Image (tube, rainbow, N blue to C red):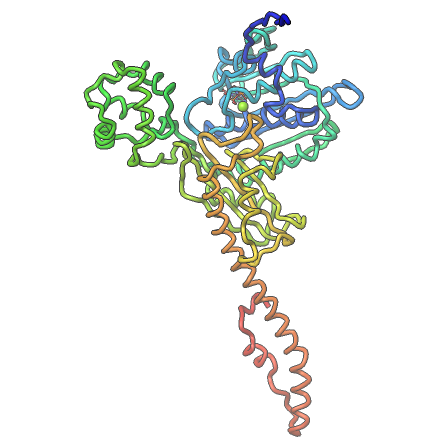
Length: 512
Ligand SMILES: Nc1ncnc2c1ncn2[C@@H]1O[C@H](COP(=O)(O)OP(=O)(O)O)[C@@H](O)[C@H]1O
Ligand SMILES: [Mg+2]
């Protein structure tokens, strides 16, 4: 039998074309999810832009109804305004019209990662409504630039349809993004409102306004203007490098010997560490890095991973909230009766530094659901989907809560914030964090710490409750006994009952 084999055709597609064909990867799976993701991505960019300059963010979001798309879906216009750093005009077209283009590839903590999020939303808007995106921005200088753009999907390039320059009389600084997209707001609404509420919780220094398509106004007002320390850019840690990165560093380096090369391009490598490592790896310190063969580079990478004595990465490239700000955020949004927060020391996985911050809130506005309410955050982004797959959920589920006298039917919220230069997300959609042993350990340790403190609070509350009950019995019967014994003893003056009651009181009078 003769096999008929069809001639295969080979072609190359651009990055935008790839994401156009695979938009599920970025979480744009259906009209309800799409509108949620679009809002989230543009708001994240706004928060990043303000935070990078340590400006307390003012973010205004408006979603307005434009018309019907299909029976179930509508066309909406999304407009997001911020007071962030602004974008220099020459970068605006690519920042919004070229997938995988961005300013956040540096090694420091940011919400954005791939140069993808905002553009995926814009791309989605373009393919569902065939309308351009409008971007207006100023860095606070004399001029404001306004662009009307579309994405050339096949070439992954922006198309500039219009460009305007205005005089910046008021020294305005910030960015306004506006585009239309298809979506299902009614179905997405609960998640969107929850997203804003949780964003306000973990960004207590931000003012966030949301006007929904029905004209309803949601306002989240900052509770503080204190901002966390801005992250500093860092160099790669020796444990986190691969051959590709080594080759790139060798290409750009001006160092002419290995010792200087290591010191110049790696985090926490000084003279002594460099010498010791090179002895360990049997590489002469005077060797020129540009003369390393491919095999030598592979061996260098393997040795960098094997060497045990590199110092762990420091955490200056991270910007955790800190216990006070986390407390302020939770107090503002949940008004709990009791709140305990705990920040772990920096730790690492695969050479990437990370910090876990965790809080437990009891009572107040914490909803009582029969299970713990879990709020998950990564780099100050709320994670609202796929809870059961997340490392924090698993740690919480595996914990022996009886030991801490804590039951899931109590009004308890657990807040977990993980920040890292590289959050170990499982997907590009940024929904849950994978179960890495190092991350799991840190979450578990933090959880034990706050659980212990909550246990003390609950035990004390229980005592106070018992005491109240006991005093209640005393104060009910003592007057009767006093009356009775006075009559029995044929006396007239009743003994001082208050004094007696005080003497049986064990706990602080203020609580009884
Ligand atoms: N509101 C904004 N203010 C300042 N810069 C922005 C804003 N939105 C987007 N940008 C710039 O556009 C780039 C691309 O954004 P995006 O597609 O969301 O990717 P990412 O955030 O992952 O870098 C960002 O890296 C940033 O430099
Ligand atoms: Mg982004």
